[in-house]
Image (tube, rainbow, N blue to C red; front, side):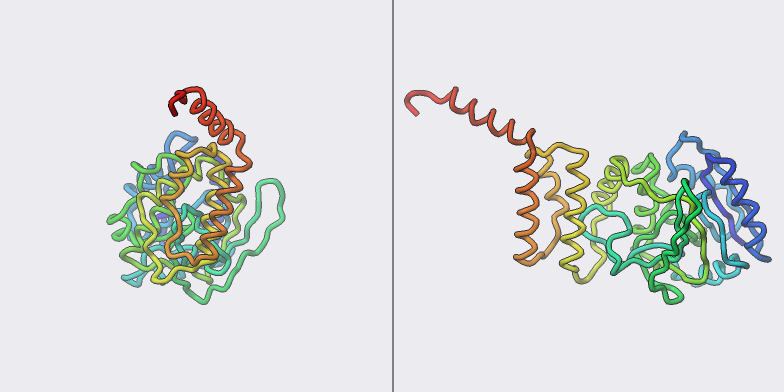
Length: 301
């Protein structure tokens, strides 16, 4: 019933997961499709490649560095996916999509998570289990675990033309899917995850592409504080990797939050002023322009 698709580049994790699936999935029919991907293609392309080989009506896209902790999880997952209006079933996601480029972890207020999260350097794990009542409706779903009916996947596919790397494939796919179907985070399947995300420049660039391609028209009402915090976080990441200059400042306005109150407008203006004030590059160019104006100024002026 379930085709499990894995973009794989670490054999020890993959072999461990395959053995774990055999022990934990229960009596549900399944197949594991390994897409060997030692950095030769983006995750979107790898997942699309694997999905083409799928023989079963339900698809599960998972990272290879996980272990299932719930016995007989296969039947549980199938029962969730049998509902026709269900889009993606995940174990981590968010019910809020801000105007600014952002990960699914927008705010604890809107996050739904059911994961044992660890890292590659030790064996300590933190149970991240927010309030998830059976199935929590979300827009964005984290890519560590994404299950979907094959017939629904066929209407969207992962966007390998837009995203050729290893970031954003999950956010883009889940947001587009939520336009037609309902995505959920469930509480009856638990996994252990061995690594966290890496929010580097490539992650930021991918999220900017996603927001340009998928406008944030998901909420009927905007959460002022969440919008302000998301935009502030975006500016912080953006100006970590890009210089503070007029062109880049203007480019960020594209993602300026809608319908902020006067107080939050002032807070964001103050943030911009601080970036400009402490940017030596911006001030050097400003001073150079002023000096150039003085040199070229004619006596008649």
